[in-house]
Image 1 (tube, rainbow, N blue to C red):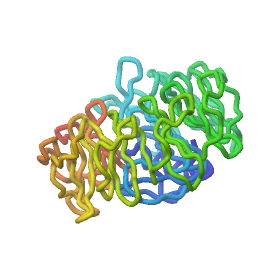
Image 2 (spheres, rainbow, N blue to C red):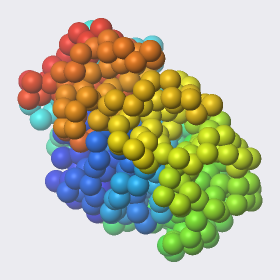
Image 3 (cartoon, rainbow, N blue to C red):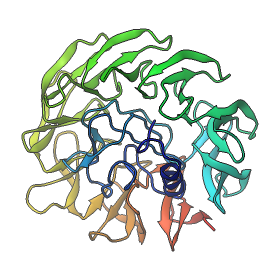
Length: 407
């Protein structure tokens, strides 16, 4: 992963923001190689882009510094290997679910009651994934991995380290050095050799060598040889890819064959067997054969989540939610809107206004009172969501009750 060249100050800013409630699956920290857009807006990452999402957030990785545009769908990466996600707020560490939290500039982990399980002691900490969490303990040279008790199982030694994904984690030994992959014991399974490396998804990881992207398996063998200008992670058997830096996007399978020929101005990963794609200046949705399920007609279009997707129309720019037939089931009326998670979706009634949560009928079940400083999806995971509140950040439950608040 990378955040504007891996500068420590950028890392600190990213951790501080995301540890305290700025959730995004793929978002860029303003001032760290890119810009961010509000919930429900597009985040489009340019060539060799990097997205680093740390505490309280799913983690994604793609590489070099980025520029961003705001062209439509949520989390649309345009010339980079965009990564996979871990859990958005809390992650399982064995039998318990632990949530990254911060106190006095040190990071630790709380449980669902807000009780500290692993005391604040880390300069940086990522959510648990595959039973381990990447952390940077104070006074050590870099990142290592802890288990759910806080015991170091991989000693701190890496300049950068991604969370574990499907048994492996991308790591970088020194600033500007190549990336490789280690297992849960710290064994270097895939030797450091890549300019940029992303997390494994569907058994494959997008990596870059000599300016081109391809995919490797868990042994480091090339499955799709490096020759692509840009890729997104594999999702449901397909990966969005771009053959030429300025060319259209299509979708490849795990052999590198074009299943959906390049034809889209922008493309997103498949979710629930549907992908949002841009044709000309408008967005629609295709199935895994490339057939249009919902004709291009929207100014912006998010991925489907829990059978609904937030979209904006050309008319007023307000967000509403459609089903997979394209029917508007929650009428446009929101200045910003995020995806549904655990039955609720964050929405703001006014531009720059506070966020609340609606249910699938469109009823406001948690009144607007939370802020999103620019990186958040404010998604619920394992019953809690990380939000901005009263000059700080908090975990709330699905009733809107504050479980933990930063101090």
